Length: 452
Image 1 (cartoon, rainbow, N blue to C red):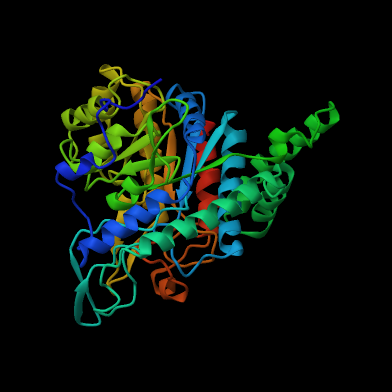
Image 2: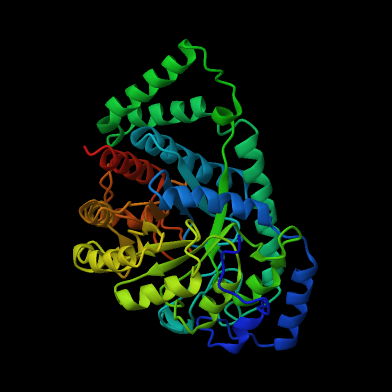
């Protein structure tokens, strides 16, 4: 079934007829054309059939029969392409999903912000570093992060490097998720270690014990613990479809259906800064048949969100459109209910997801960008409360996390303090939850899902 609103005449370059915000100032348009042509000749990173499988899973989320966990880096780095880095990030996602799956007794759809999250929108075109004004860092797919004029010149050749890094990341993800690393029993052992060895983990000892008993019961009644469903998992990839030259070049027509798909990732989204109904990003997303998302910030009104639903999912296909709300802990109860009611009353089958990160970012007195774990959890709790009150399904969470032991977000079970932020603050852009904070969050969300 066609999911997009595009006419048969839609092409991947149609976005060029609309205003495209947050795009780099390429110094040589001819080089951009050359790189885009080369990307067009390269194999797709993902396949249309995989995107359709994810659409089916997200349809279950839209109908309240599954939960979405979308997590990964704020901005992937060209410096961190290692098996260890990818493995540790995946490990945290698997651990979080295991706790959520048991608590809700529902499947958890696992989508990584991986293999393509190389660019970021910015509030200002310039930033000041050590007293020098420079073009704002927009991600390694555009330019370098070094604080020099030369490094911040947009280089289209970096799109090729991003493609090859995404290829390597996908190869590792597929090997880990299908080769035994994701075995449920092993994931449970990791979670038991978290519960036993960290202050925040001990709070969840009862839940971990219940999971252990469930696994023992399955084995006792003769369930084959080596069955594929317990030994392998599906993890899909996603990123913000921000750099339209890159997305256009990786858009392919499916040989089975004749429909267009963005083959740079299984799931792509428009950000809060680029979701204008008449803008280039929405025009592009309207034409591809992937499951797609839209970030919804405090400035969104119900009528605007409803217009986006009509443009991006006119056929009302469950799972096609995810609304990722990023409203802030202090405004979630004010802003979310009217949005939910407007979409619900119009009978649009969206997936509602909470991004508790971007609405809760602030600067410390020393100028460090950070987030407080308490605010993050407060927004999630408000998200659940609003949906329960409105009779709708709180479909998932969208998080910026890492498997590394970073010190970028305040609080959590280890009570990370402001003076500790500089210990291991390594993000390229926004602060991420570290592995322990991510697991703490997952177990707390598990408690919410059980109504604790």
